[in-house]
Length: 431
Length: 64
Image (cartoon, rainbow over all chains, first blue to last red; front, side, top):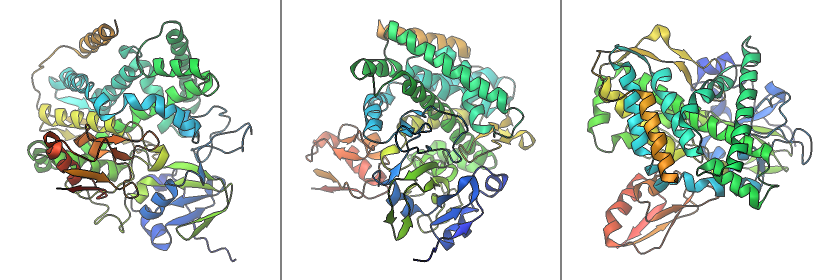
């Protein structure tokens, strides 16, 4: 059979992608919902919402496995291109079922709708305290002062690590995502991420010696029962994954929403006043921005899905961000429609690797945005200071989103005091 | 009232479990929804109706 593939010039890490998202997907998709790019060693790019759903529901045909030493099939994980020299796996996101499911079983109870509710008061107080820190000055950076802080402290809480340690993980968690390999800063960032892995390995040992509640404690307990599946290396990989997923994605989502709302005071009021609008708006911001833009897969066997042929060993990039702008699935796909319904977005991924923390992300996003709209209601973004990630192909995020507003009055204690009080509350619950 | 989730239609948005966590649970494998029991206690009927209304896939059906 003749090779009928549609070949496109495409690289999600390129400046063209950043400048062209989301429109860059339209000409590709109109030719075919899956196209072939010769970049990054050659890979399929899936941009059609229907096809991406069909593929994601076939874990028998797709592998997330990262196996650089060739112990299994030599697959190259979820990053395209595969990172040079990284021999460890990115936690359970670079595993396949049934191994991957073992990890999710341990972690799911921490992220159920009921489980996340108990964190809501802390998220609310943290958001208030973050804004209190800056409200008297009339200036803030929504990234540095709010959206980087709240998800990070919250993630520490879920892991069961010291809350104030969020500062040690914050820069490496974001910088490893936004710094491209050709950047002069890259060696420093790699160094930071190695230090972060060492720190987590140290925490793991501490929790082994002195068990405590939280995700780290649960993983350590799982290791006792099954030391092979829950080996130290994959536990550290999993902690890095949870920190990456917990810190960086919600930050990106919050920044996108607050940036979009900059010039729309009427929409800000609607979000605060119309019941239910915040719920649909949250799904819409998630769809529009798609913080985690996509993920790499490896085809395990020659197959045909949705009328498209794939070969064993082919690399595939599930372009969730582009699929979320498919006009066949979404009317006016490049517009933000706060009450869009139904909204069948794939921004949390689909299938067995779907985001494990989506309910937590929604809760902390909504809390931060509502608090920002209440406390700095007339903010205006300082456009000259806005810095998006240099490379948005992994996470579509912002490094800086500075804004000015009419100064207000501090209403509560300093942030570190609030964090300290919550630490004592959590410690008390464990005693 | 009786409630069902069509497993072939559900895509795991998890919004029903946020609307009515006592009625809808999420599968370990992929976060897709299933019901605790098809019979809905009267006190939870309103939450279930909200869950039906928030499902973007139209995967939840109620009777009675």
